[in-house]
Length: 355
Image 1 (cartoon, helix red, strand yellow):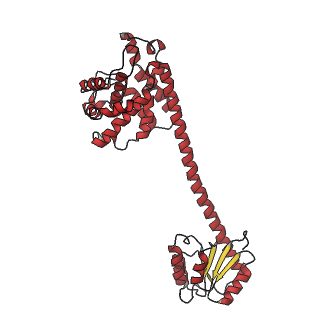
Image 2 (image 1 turned 180 degrees about the horizontal axis):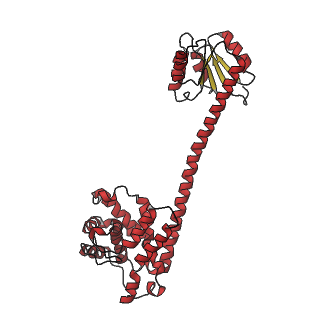
Image 3 (image 1 turned 180 degrees about the vertical axis):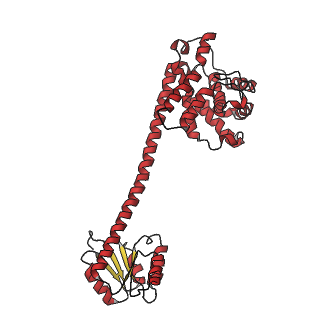
């Protein structure tokens, strides 16, 4: 077979028709002839034609029965079929088309007309395949581009978070540790069913990424305060507390430059609310109880646990057990009691993940 010619299978129980058809088709196509549907199926075992020209009125298995088998087989269902028949009733044509044929040509046929019909259908089929290939590859390109954007976004986030940690060098690793704490609490909330309505539909991966910006407002805090080796004065502490509002404002500025919403909204809530207290004595807004977004209440526990168990210039790291005791004692004042209960039941995971 000549590789540059497309294969056409001609099926007809009339040998004269096969010879005539082969003679005028072979100039443009590689032609395989079959005197019956059974012979056609044998040819299809090792060949995939560009098109099948199928006679309808044949003994043993007619064209209608043959096309049903073709269309029921995943390997042959997409091969275009043109019916060749002496029938010319509209009902016959409708039946053939309804079974999946792409055309219906009556015999005796004009060779030039048949060649043109085949050419048109192969052109359409080729365009369909090209479009399908394009769509499949477009989807792949979109997925690759989306993944690339997500990776770039995460890299930018990580860089910004590390920039904050470089300035506030007494809390190195704080962001990653709070991320682990948040993940633990979220996983245990899902298992326990606590706040199931509120957490339903949360994009956990996006939420964990956005939590990296919870301390971004510290960029706006003076080094004299941020890197002070001892305890802060009252005025200094009041200035430090502004980092929650500064973080919210920074993220709001980013929001004006992008259509992205969920990710930045998560980040803004984390930044603004992780220092609010359950009893209303926190900052920056003095929110109380369930007025505090659940994101902020979760972050509050992860944030304080890490602060307690980490070394500071003005204190040693508290043991895990002591940190759990302090958080438990502040249930209902600083922390959401329901979240503290989940934390205490799973405190061992915090210790294990911090080793």
